[in-house]
Image 1 (tube, helix red, strand yellow):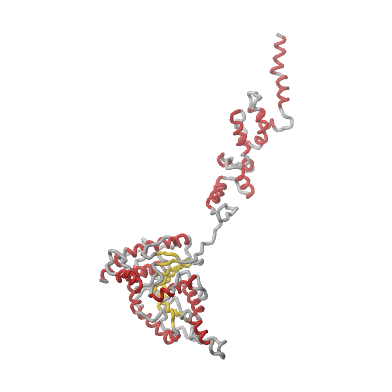
Image 2: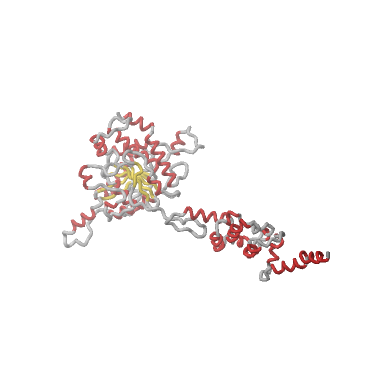
Length: 500
């Protein structure tokens, strides 16, 4: 009885307390603060080893997580819990915020890399932070740089075009290859050109867009006629060619209107005509009208190039294309009952008459005044903006002429023959006395006139093409819809039947 009474205090009394003091590590003074002794009430000694390894991590837990049961009691999950605790340094950053909820488990599973990045950048490790980082890394192109602040790819300059591409192919079908060069911005200018065969449309468009007269014509963005094509009377351009500059100027070069070479190609090669056209010349004329009506709808400026003054059939063609032009889409709140309101809301581009390959006599002030008078009388009933937006008198080409000398000044500009300067220089080199003096041309140099024309064309007002402001990509879709409407136009079909 006395032995049992003496043994019981040794097992449950002072002996038990002395054993527990020996099991505690004196080098860990904060052990009794974290609470593992209070959590483990079963007194099992198998969990003492893992507890000693995880004590530095447990000390770093916020007070809100101290009441959670420890995972060290499960021997089967000791390795997984140890690895999860090693990957927890992100809670060290969360503990600096007062009153903030803890980071979700899926956020902590992202690894210590994101936590170090967030701590380095001084951002709070909330969920949108690493979502921005992941989104920026995923959207960045292989060759682009990533902004370290927002984690997104930096803006790169638009891709520069080196040559023109097809907007409408030879079969008059729409092409989508130009879409990759367009941006989502509204500051753009669309310039188109029409003219008869061999007037120099592609050369003028190349000089206005990206080339200079000193460059080789074989490197122009719009291909010019080769000597072989000139000898056999062929045409170089087919369909509609597209080119956009770094200044966001869109140039559209078209095939020649009323082209005899296209008609000859249709007849000699036995090309099958569409079922709605019976004769080849009707098909060629309708192709020309479709291209002109399309440019009158989607362009801010349309150049009409001619190499001699003047062809009355050209002005008749322009008036026909204006009549068959598709109507501009109107807003829903506009009423369609009044004819005057419809005409006021209809869009018409600026039209510029470019007299290419002009002779010396064409630059005479009296001849220039007659040209303006003829064009004004031929276009007086047109809604196209053919006057008031371009002036040769403002370019100091004719110094001393007053502004009211031309009377009604139209948008007319004269360009001399491109290689006339070299021919005159070679002709004047035979005279030894005047070899150092420039020859008299009667007009400024070709390079100077091209520069003045370019500055005036590109500074024209950019009217709104539709009832909404169009970006470059929206303009492309709008132009595709207009081209499809032009090809299926009932007015053009009825006009083609009247030509028979």
